[in-house]
Image 1 (cartoon, one colour):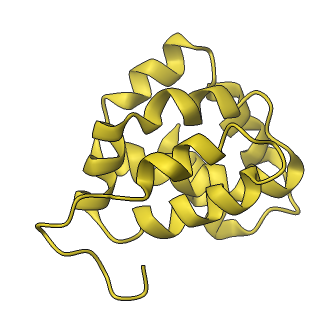
Image 2: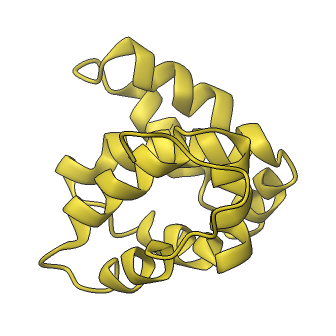
Length: 120
């Protein structure tokens, strides 16, 4: 991740990171790795969506622990920034309330509140 993403590279370890998201013990670390990967740009987000990230991240929203809330907001901002049509799925699943709650939280950093507003 430190060296960027080459256009011809396939995400070899991305399916493994998605599988680790299922383990509650390692979930936070996997979310941080996924977030770092998504910050590499649109190609990384596209490859993540192609591998099947969407259902994993959607199911994590209702069960988010306090320590994973900011990283999930950042991941969702990357997804919506790449494909705004994913917003419709959030509304269909009635998940927008999680972003609204985050917006109302005064202890959350303003940059993450901006991401939550962008996502919603």
